[in-house]
Length: 536
Image 1 (cartoon, rainbow, N blue to C red):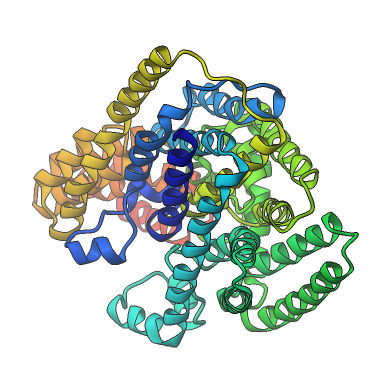
Image 2: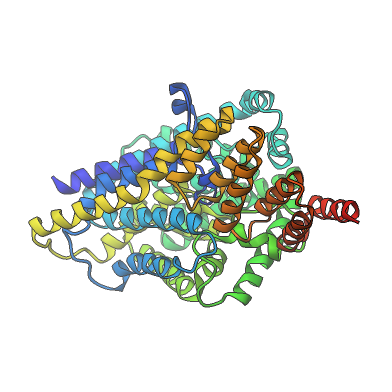
């Protein structure tokens, strides 16, 4: 009964995660939850809800088995490295959110390792259903949905406006590159599941649907990752002549799509990524051993960036970000985790399921070199489920321990998780109300529920300023800057409030600090020059 329950819960999670949890964990603190019930149907859900759902459904599997061997211990060791670097974080809220989501990844990986091979069809079926729904939403966007979105939200950022104008689809996953990463992960298992059920024509239709949507994302990294996954299938099934020919044909299609994608979308993203990677390398140079804290690249990057690129919240390279955020030990464990997973995947039987898993994990690693799939729950949860599946089939878990002690331990751990993340879920609702109506009381309620959330304090400061309560606004901006001391935007807001309060010398000093924290921001420099001139 327990393997069936675990397989069913994992199937539900891999179906729900890409549909409803596409917001990157590093920006979840700034995203309000849906309001009306129709918004819950169409928009993304708060990530803390995924944490509570995953632990509530799967925590009971954790203490009931013993894990043997390094392969099955690496996920827990990875989580331990994150916990070890959390106390010294430069942004406690970002690290709390990131570590909690990493705990979900480790949990689903562990649970998947306990699922026997005969129950894997449920998980693969959930993944196949998810990718079909996501791709149908993406096709709707291409056929008019993006134009409707642009008309509804005219005041979007230039980056978002450019993507909407280019008709780059993103499905339910917030960004086009995230959709591409999810398709790369789901491609093989979804087709293997359909093929195994003898739905051959449907498998071909779904393959065409996924390839079409992958091209429409305009993600060259996703296209190249699928090409790498195809090479993995050819290598893993090298004794099968027809499979090799199919892989070569797929590579030709992907190569043509890459050429067309480059002609359509240009090379700006490559230049931006290069600056992100250089920024991460500089952070690693200054913080090589412990990093700056899990999920904190967005706080530190503006200090190190040299080009007028956007203030990215992620490195667009999972491996570099793990090192810059959490230090060299976390990087080494993360590399070992996926190297061991790939090694185990290539040792699976060369049947469609084994080849699909090898291709999926290879594509995940390849795409993780150019994007931030690790920090998008809708993409990472399916990947860690497949990783756990490979681990379980390669090194089966040991016998169960005492049920009474196991259930007690699971209950205690679940209570800790609820105490930890339920306030984050509760705080999101007054924050959303404050964003919509400017309600100062709601903004302050959200900040009190999450006192380490700098964005909530800054929002409370904005609401207080709008209400004419300048002293409260100054205090809230001070709290925001204390929670995220390297974020120049909070110093800038604080400086403007100081200027309005007549404290001009302090405002100039605060603007200087904002420029130091983000030296490539032209707006901050202009305001500093104007303030200095006015004081003189």
